[in-house]
Amino acid sequence: MRARRSCLAVPGSNPRFIEKAQGLAADEVFLDLEDAVAPAAKEQARENAVAALRDGDWSGKTIVVRINDVTTQWAYRDVVDIVEGAGDRLDCLLLPKVEDASHVVWLDMLLTQIEKALGLTRRIGIEAQIESARGLVNVDAIAASSDRLETLVFGPADFMASIGMKTLVVGEQPPGYGEGDAYHYILMRILMAARANDLQAIDGPYLQIKDVDGFRRVARRAAALGFDGKWVLHPSQVEAGNEVFSPSQEDYEHAELILDAYEYYTTVERRGAAMLGNEMIDEASRKMALVVAAKGRAAGLARERSFERPTMG
Image 1 (cartoon, helix red, strand yellow):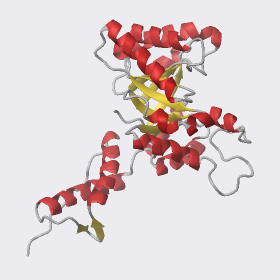
Image 2 (image 1 turned 30 degrees about the vertical axis):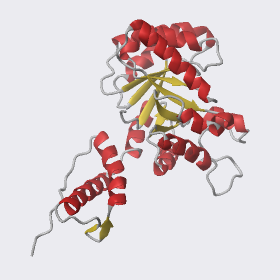
Image 3 (image 1 turned 180 degrees about the horizontal axis):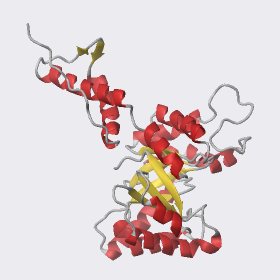
Image 4 (image 1 turned 45 degrees about the horizontal axis):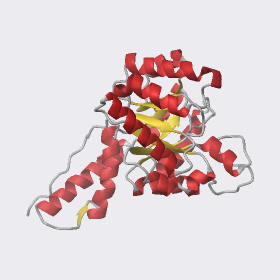
């Protein structure tokens, strides 16, 4: 699976935004047929999405379409029209408001039928968006529901409404909560389900699009826990998202040095634990370093230092 540090939401009803999105440095672009599209514009949005998939230049990006949720009259036609029209150009479908594993199973089965009918050799993945209390309670079963599933996504606005959170500012702490983090349990619950099933975990949007500092603050919370990325709604958020979810040059270099040192000490000197400067390293250190190094490589970071083998004497 490709890295998903910044996931740019683009209304499928707006061709101008779709064209502009192709030139932005987002890792993923998803064309939205759901909340960003009025009911009367759903059909046109599908047509716009198919045209964008077929004619656009999405090089280097994961390209996704968010369909409408399974309880609506639009969902099945979203899947059929998008996949029949441009399934060979599509990486994933994003399923919103997932509350039960059966929602993902439905989409998996429908995709399988269409792929077989069309003779598609490209298998389309699924991203599942957790947006309600019921979805969070069932997140373990959802995460294990399909081998097409690649990502769990937190949908904060609908989730806050579903639990009656007393605020209108998406992503910020509700007034009166105190010093803690009202979202910590939610984010960790989604993250644990994702990691237990080898999935990526993506934080939802920050709606104050002109407050880049606020976006960074909220994004750092998810990145610190281990989330892979965050939705972005505006070009100003793309650079910030890529930065927050990429390791620093220093951390990346440190991770690569740990990997080099561990390989040397376990294969040349045949020790299971050793020192890198003043730091003891072992198999657990190697596993942690692999995560940071992989994120750094995906972000395009280049090494500036190399491991120096200890001199024999």
